[in-house]
Image (cartoon, rainbow over all chains, first blue to last red; front, side, top):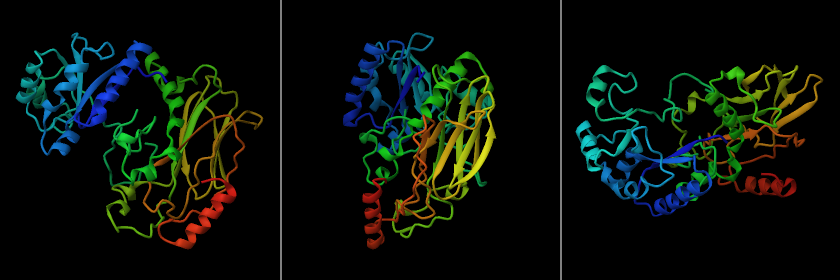
Length: 155
Length: 221
């Protein structure tokens, strides 16, 4: 179809099928489509709903086991590309500590659109988060804000 | 190619692991394939990577055109008889903002040579002159059969998107099902469409019987 890769957005890394699915997808991509890359997105919003609180370390094992896979996407700094859905309510220092736990060998491009000033690129936002992240992204083409006016599903 | 299986923006397979609730299986199953969107995405990716505009999009190699129609299959005026009996039968959030529309997109060659797009909703036809690249639009939808045709200059049908589920003014799934039928533009199968009466099967046993008899006699869903 023309895709270069997939984000694997994981809401609960403890589910039984996660590892089997990853094994299959990573090996299949490596063996059949070597230019096709995969990366893990930490769905901290769903994960928080499952656990009752954000437990970013729940992702430790799958990151540890797949971030060096030949089909895993590496960022421009040569480190494994990791994204997210939401900040999980974690502060900038939480994220800095998390990156440190990986020896800063991460290329972090989270979706932090639950943080104030994210969607307006507020200078205060950059001051707070600028040193934490390597890039920003959004999932919001898939979830529109519900408006008060009538609109077509074409929009 | 999907996130959280039951959400309706999927374009690929629905995997049971992410779609194992009874309710989502009513509106996200094999009768609700969204693969009809894929050729449009291929065309979009090609244009994006080449830095081309929407009007410079082209069909993938070997195709006259690519396109799809998509629409929800109940109307804003539809009423579900068991509304509110549990959380699944409530109207979904944002229900009142959805319009009753037949939505379409078609990518034509750089020189469309007088091609036209014809939408047919319950027999009502609208004509749209073909322009180079991405053509898209929406027309008010009516309960009944839905079809889009790509016509050549002489009015011959080159390709058609048809055969998707009919739009109902009732509530055939017993829930306010807002998922889209997505029907790709392909070689015309000649489907002109029949729309057997579909009742909310849980509610009225007699309707259930009628609906099953119709299904047996027409072999269609």
